[in-house]
Length: 361
Image (cartoon, rainbow, N blue to C red):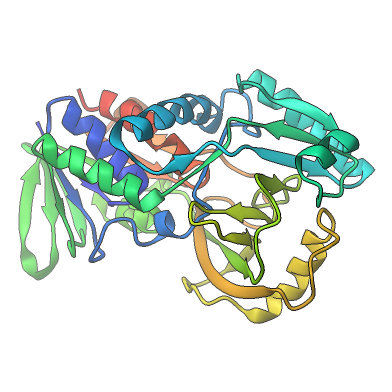
C-alpha cells in the first residue's frame, strides 16, 4: 500500500517511520524546504515524563509509553539526549494544592520514580530555587530534536520511503482507487491512504479534503510561546518548572545539550502566525521567574525565539486532548486526520506513529 503522510515535523516523521516499518510504501510531503522547521524546531526539546495529563487521554496514553521508547531509540540510533530530570515547584499555598493534584495524576499515569520533596530537600538539589515544596521527576530529559528527526528521516529512507520537500498539498479527493492528491500547477498523484499530520496547516488541509466530514475539523487557535535566553552561566542542573498555567506548562528553566539556559515559553494568543519575540514581554518573565528564582539578575534576559502551539481550544476554554481521527471514527477509509498535536507531541511521536500505522492495515 502506498501511503502519503502530509507534514515532516517530528510527529509526521514518527508516523512515516512506523508506516514504512510496517511494510508500506511511504511518501512524506513537506511544504517547507527542510524537515521540522516549524513547531518541531521551536520548542523546549524536553522528553516529558507524562506527569500532568488527564486519565485515559491520548496524551496520558502516549507520553509515558513513548518516552520509554524514545530513550531506547536515542541510545540505539546515537541521538544526543540526556536524562537530567526536572522539579515542579510550588511557591504558595494555591500552588501546593495544585502540586498535590499533579503528583496524584503522575501516579495514575504510571510515571516512574516521581517523589514529593520539601523545601530543604529541594535546596540540596538546586540551591538557587525558592519553593515551599516540589515534585521531582528524574525520568524527564532533553533531546537534540533535529538529530532525532534526522534519525527518523534516515530510517524512513532505509525502508524505501521518501521525503518530498517544497511539496504543498492543495487538495485531497476520494476516488475509487484511493486518494487523488493535488499539488500546485495542476499536478496530481493517486495514493492508497493519506495521513494529515500538517501541524499548523492540518485544519486547512482538513477543509480541502473532499469526502471528509467538515464538521469534524476543529478550529485552530494559535498560542505563541516566547523564549528568552539567559546572559550568564546556567545556575541549575535540571529543568525547573512552576505549576501549569492556562494554555501551557508555565515559564520554566530550559536547558539544552550545549550547556545554555533559557526561559519560556509563555502563552501569547495571536491571530496570525509570526515568530518575533517582543522584548517588552521580558518584564512579565522577570516576575514569573523570580517566584522560584529570586536571584535572577536585572537585565539578564535576551529575546531568543518563539514557537506556536497548534491548539484546538482558545483562551478561557477548557484544554482539549489530541485528536487522532481514524476511519473507525469518521467512516472514510484509509484516511487519518491529526489535529491539536502540541506538547508532548515530540515525546509521544513514536507511540503516535504506531497507533496511526495500525489504522492503515
